Image (cartoon, rainbow over all chains, first blue to last red; front, side, top):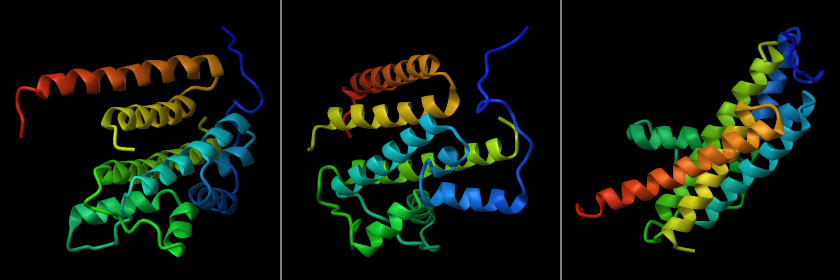
Length: 136
Length: 57
């Protein structure tokens, strides 16, 4: 039984390790960029727009970008999730955004948007890695 | 913007969108999966909200 498949969707041979490392780094720094590089334009554009937008909404809702504090395990995990979005995180830190306003009614929503954007980008990075390895 | 329900809908939209695009390849399947996920998220939150209504913390 044959299945419909475009050239971009067919599994390909694994790329060189250096290229894969660069691809994973790029995928983390700029959400969707690795998918664009791999010729998956539609997916790449959706990730490129949706994930940074989600991160921006999180900042707008007065969410906090958590510090990497080992003494507070939940804060530490939140900090890892925040950093998952890549470059937008560093831009936000440079602009002194993400201080968080705990008295705001939307504070927890903001945190949820910020962390979920980062965690979703981790999944996007894993997907790009799978494609580069020829698994998808 | 402090409408909890609107924020919930917005959150469900983004998560459904990313998961649908990540998991499916054709636009038609993505739309179907995304719509199902979005509906599931909103309905589950709505039902759970009402179930928790008699138990205020």
